[in-house]
Length: 173
Image 1 (cartoon, rainbow, N blue to C red):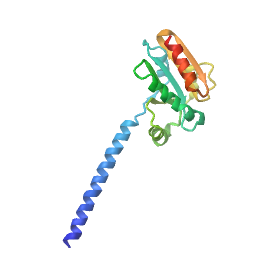
Image 2: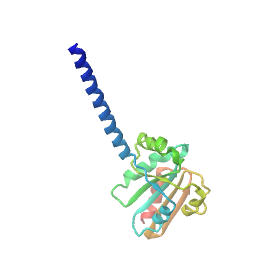
Image 3: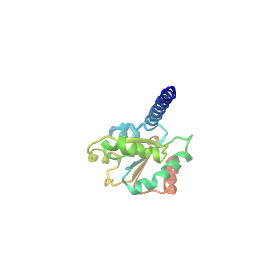
Image 4: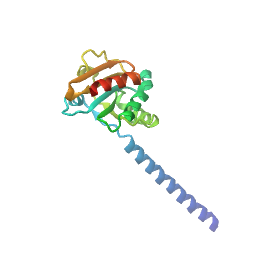
């Protein structure tokens, strides 16, 4: 009978260890997957910031094929300009109820290092014009701004790395 009790205790210890490891892993993922919710006013803050930082703001969604296809270009840009005053911000326009179940796992799966935020506005018409009055609302769309230099360029559609870098270089001048 003693060997059976020992196996039970070993199994119980093993189960506790597995649960502890799983909780530790989940807490790490929760930290790594923090996606702040922003309001439309944040766009105005970026546009009017008293900074020499260049903001490359991409509007995308996990369900948008061209959006997903261009994400590596933004990641490459973020890496290329690391250490410089260039900030890539990926604004998710997915459905709010899918942030936890779809957006966060997507960001982890794609190993995105750029800042990811979620546009927390129920009506896109309330913020699309803040981005650019000519924007039809289609995604992907990208806004490059250098607030102190009064540089602003809006692009609707999928971007290549070369086009992104050209925009950033124009903003740096």
